[in-house]
Image (cartoon, rainbow, N blue to C red; front, side, top):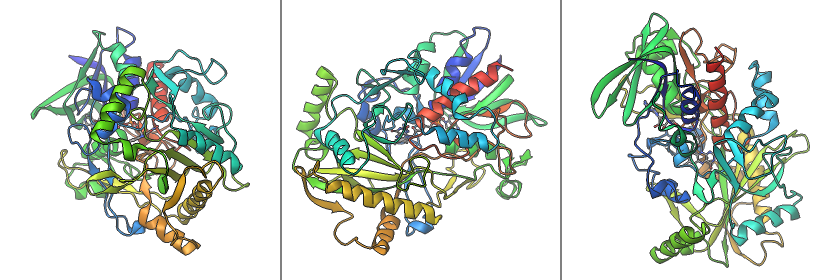
Length: 528
Ligand SMILES: Cc1cc2nc3c(=O)[nH]c(=O)nc-3n(C[C@H](O)[C@H](O)[C@H](O)COP(=O)(O)OP(=O)(O)OC[C@H]3O[C@@H](n4cnc5c(N)ncnc54)[C@H](O)[C@@H]3O)c2cc1C
């Protein structure tokens, strides 16, 4: 059997590709996924997919970063979905396209065809937004996007608080204007999680020309000279290989796509040879340019019930019942509202994003733990961070995790922007809108006043938003890994299509952009 296309990874981008490439019954498509199925209620009840997966090796790759030198040597978990739907089956479901300027910047970097006007048709094609059809929405895509149902009263107060700080309410941050405060648009369908697997794989499941293999861990690519002719993988310990006629597409995500390339001999020559892998092609940028959104939490104790006081066994039962009966309540989402803010007039578009959630807690060695008092949190993050990290080989064993070095906050701009965002979030706590609710600030607390205090707070507490990108970046410079057609430079029959190809982070959460990339990649492949 020779496949026309082999896709590695059934995540946000890979599911879109599998659907689109197999639409023509003439195309024989194989989709290989290292994780298992996403069937069952865990991945229907929105927050359960996240809560039950983080730190669970059956559904999460459970990566951990190196000690980060600019964050006081802290190590951090780096969760990545390991099941059908990939990270879209375990994520926070926020649907954010990013700013027009982000994609125009990609095009300015030499990536023809990736400007906003050129990617907009692909966003439209993936989505079915409950907003009326317009220049921005077609309304016919498989991925459901709806406003979060029945948000908490504190989330509504957040939008008022923003208005009182000069941040206007925005009815649609994915439309003409991103700036402003809004209730979140989420990947849910009538209150159920709608992952890329649910939206794109499920409708294609009966196609005879699409084969989906779960628990298939791809270990390396197979070559004839510098052309990819197949892949090698293991299913339940048994080694197998499959051959391809046209192309292999790597959609294994921002950590695993560069890992598979390096394990296959494609990457920085000196590094991969030092790890005992036979060199196929020297591409110095593989695994470089790792970027993620750094964020700090500003939190307050409040007078009303939040997730903290309701997530006991009885409260969970009631929330579950509420969701079953009305598709409302705490089971829908932890973060519920969002604001995109220009903190300086000189910024052309928002440089800070705020996520609001009626809950509070902290990351511990055992994962995220809720406080035992009613809490709300504003998470402030840098939209376009300048720090860059790396993903490298630890050794040549395909089952051994790669080394993830975030190098977060190495660029002073990121620290300054987080301080500005943190101060803004603190000002929001003391608005009239929050006055009836706030008892006292919990974090950063009264000890943080001048800029030196803020910098210390930022470096001690900043965390990743789990949006890694850039490790197989698209471009034409010497560090670019793929060209604007997503072909791996110097190799035939191989493309990468997932978060790793983004040359720079979009100003917002990354899932929508990954599905857009899958959609555009399918078009590029089918038009060959
Ligand atoms: C906890 C969490 C919360 C998040 N919240 C949000 C949010 O609210 N909104 C948002 O927009 N974004 C969010 N994100 C980020 C977003 O989900 C990701 O950017 C996006 O899903 C990445 O898509 P991808 O296609 O690049 O990779 P993934 O979706 O991660 O897919 C990669 C797939 O490849 C498979 N794979 C990897 N290696 C191999 C191999 N060797 N062989 C076979 N298969 C392999 C993986 O198992 C996985 O299924 C969140 C992410 C996480 C982890």
